[in-house]
Amino acid sequence: MAGPTLIIALDFPSERETLAFLDQLKKPAYVKVGMELFYREGPAILQKIKARGHRIFLDLKLHDIPNTVKSAMRNLAFHEVDMVNLHGAGGVKMMRQALEGLEEGSRERGKRPLCIAVTQLTSTGEDMLHKELLIGASLTETVEHYARMAKEAGLDGVVCSVHEAKRIHQVCGEGFLTVTPGIRPAGQSADDQVRVASPAYAREQGCDYVVVGRPITQAEDKAAAYENILRELEGIPGKGKE
Ligand code: C5P
Image (cartoon, rainbow, N blue to C red):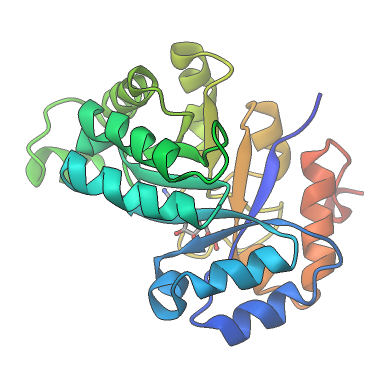
């Protein structure tokens, strides 16, 4: 069984730190470019990363009226990234139009970036959901509902926690992609993540992609940290467990 695909979160302030990090990897990777880096460097950073052979998940979490999201997605597709995302809270129409925009903007017909929905941010707790957003359903119900909406709109999957991946596959089908952050190899600091899980557990839960940042980007030997997590995702015990 193929394990989850590893995506490295490039949470760096600028191009200099980003390229210095990428130069330490020995082979092409799948990387995530988020708002911090993209808003500083713009689309030029995407081309520099692509030129080094890496695949890109552009994590900008779009959320606006359907027409605006469609036009924005058309322009993101132009940069030929591999995956983009949006907030499921924008609704089914916004998600459908996002896909239309991606298809229109793709230079190669039928080869659009994957599009996944954020269900609920991990910073949203049960209390905030009820008291601030005035949503009466539970967090779990909301996550499942947004996943179903994303599926209905034709999206490729959702961002969710490792602990939700199995359920989402049951509800939306095995082919519906789950992209899961909050991964920490055994014995490593959780940083500010509240509920963390090991790469081996993500594999067991059938996650399709895992997003890992600091355990790789802040490691002393970054290439070794990357290889260890890759091995654990493939079902080969990591160094910490040998
Ligand atoms: O460094 P760390 O492994 O915690 O990085 C996880 C990455 O996944 C960060 O870029 C973070 O913004 C992102 N993310 C997350 N939780 C979510 C959605 C995205 O940690 N629910």
